[in-house]
Image (tube, rainbow, N blue to C red; front, side):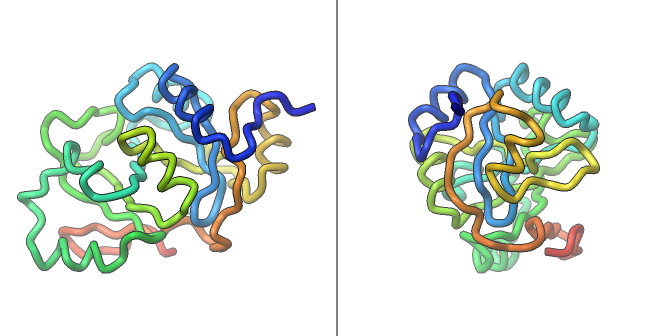
Amino acid sequence: MIKKIFFNSIQNCIEELNRGGIIIYPTEAVFGFGCDPENEIAVMKLILLKNRSINKGFILIAENYDQLKKYIADYKISSIQRKHMFSYWPGPTTFVVPTVPQTYKWLTGRFNSLAVRVTNHPNVKELCNKFGKPIISTSANIANRTPCYTPQEVIKQFGQSFPILFGNTCGRKRPSEIRNIITGDIIRQG
């Protein structure tokens, strides 16, 4: 029997996030690992779990732009750039934005920017809404390995160690596109 998989239990996932734990949840394309972006110990556990470089930084996923504002140097984004970004949201496009000096280095890595996304996944929107802030979003896999597209793949790779917010991905075949809001460059094709 799978003991730590919570069928649509957003409350159990929120409790895990509040305890400094890691959760697994469906995103637009793959299953992702998430944790509280303000909990350094949780983020370090996630870095070790994925065998990921701390210099890479992370994506924050949120229900709305207001949840992201404390991390973003919004004044550096022009109204035209903001309108362009909002035309993709909510949705599967991630934008790299300038950060305020207080943004944690464990989120930005070696950069002075941060990758952010306002999701259109209903379960994740509800999760972020009830948690009251964004969560880290990184694919549920060891670095440089294939991401998990189903709960069964997650269990096969990671066992029953993490609560999984059950649900389906939105069916996209590739991870989110990543664009730099300032330069307009496409960093990762979606």
